Amino acid sequence: MSVARSEVTSLNSVLDVDGISPHAVVDAGAKIGANVIVEPFAVIKGMVQLGDGCHVHSQAVIGDVPQDRKFNGESSGVRVGEGTVIREGATIHRATGEANTTVVGKRCYLMTQSHVAHNCVIGNNVTLVSGALLGGHVEIDDDVIVGGNTGVHQCVRIGALSILAAGSLVSQDVPPFALTDRHGRVAGINLVGLRRAGYSSVERNEIKEAYRQLYRCGIPAREIVDVLTANAHSDAVFKLIEFLKGNSIRGLSRSTGLRTSHG
Image (tube, rainbow, N blue to C red):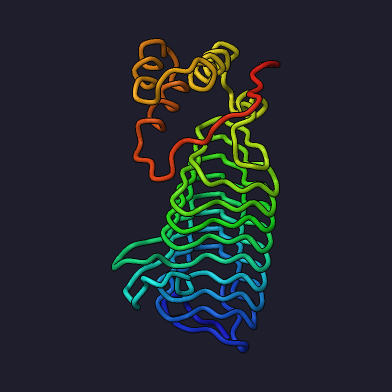
C-alpha cells in the first residue's frame, strides 16, 4: 500500500509508510518530517512535531499528557529537532499551559528509559544517558551530557558544555562548562569538552580564572557579574556571564574541590 505522508492521520499495525514501522502508532495531528524512522511499538501522540531524520525506537512515547496536577487538558505540544535519536522506552511529555511546547533540539540523543518532563527546553546536541530524568521546566543549553540515572529537579538550568555525573541529584543551576559530582555540586571544568569544541588555550584559561573568581574568591553573588564583566575578554566568559544574569528559581550550584588544572 502506498500512502502519501500528507494523507496519513493515524497509523496501525497494517501500515508501513515512509519509515513508520508496523505496530507503531502515530496519532492524528502529529507532524512527521522527512526520513523519520519510527520503530515498532513506539507511540507518537497528536500535537507532536518530529524534525527531519529523527529516529524513534521501540516503546518510546512522545507527546503524552504531562505528569502535572495543574494540567487541565489544554492544547499544548512537543517539538523535536532534526536528527534526534530517541531510544527504547524514552518519554517526552507535552507542556502544561495553553499553546506551550516542550522542546528537544537538533541532534540530541535520548538513551533508554530517559524522561523529558513537561515544559522542558533542551538545546542541540544534548545527550541524556539511560535513566536520566528531567523534571518540569528544566532548561538545558547545547552540548550537555546528563549522566545515567541522574535526576534533575524541576526549574533547574544547565549551561552549555557541562557534564552531570552519573547517578547524581541536581537541584540547583549548573553553569556552562562545569563538571558536577554525584551531589550536583560543581567539581571541575569540562576542559576535554572545551578542547574538542575548539576553545583555545587562552579561552580555557579565561574560563578557569572566571571560575576561580566565581567559586574561590568569596565575591558576593550581587557583585560577581560586574567583576567577571570587568575582566572578560572572550565570548566563552560572556556566555558564563549571560547564564549568571539569567532568571534563576533554584539558585546557583555550590562547588566542592573545584579542579581547574590540566587545561
